[in-house]
Image (cartoon, rainbow, N blue to C red):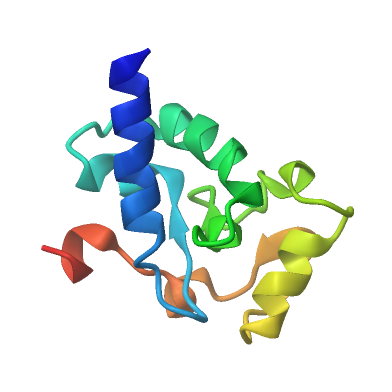
Length: 110
């Protein structure tokens, strides 16, 4: 369990650095952390982050830009509303022009 907690903290550290108006994916965070096959673990970490005010969990989506974590936010549409408030266009639970908004921690954080 301790290893999972450490991994989750590393996930939160990366998520805290996602700029306003940008998004990243579970897989991109996993790759950055040297655990490329652990996108699902990043998802589990993000499940609990929706209640953490200092972790912008709404900025983490799946690789296709789908809001797969939206059911972990209070209210049925909060994740989409938060993204739209940052200028990100979302249609049918999917970010439009994902490449325009995508933030790759591998490139941005080195």
